[in-house]
Image (cartoon, rainbow, N blue to C red):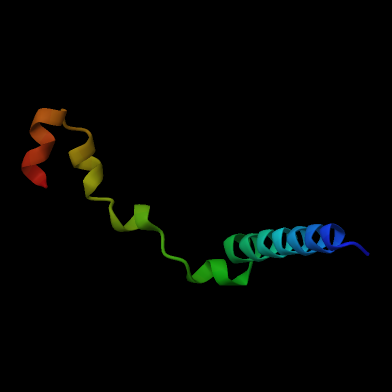
Length: 59
């Protein structure tokens, strides 16, 4: 095989492997351990409803 073919196969395999790992991490067993930043910042919902000139007092 030519070098270009081997490089293309290697890059394609790497891309498929990385995509599979990302999907497994996002939706598989490890996803149960991920934290939800939106759950941690529920108190900011009240600040976000204020007009912009009043919201800076709460930061």
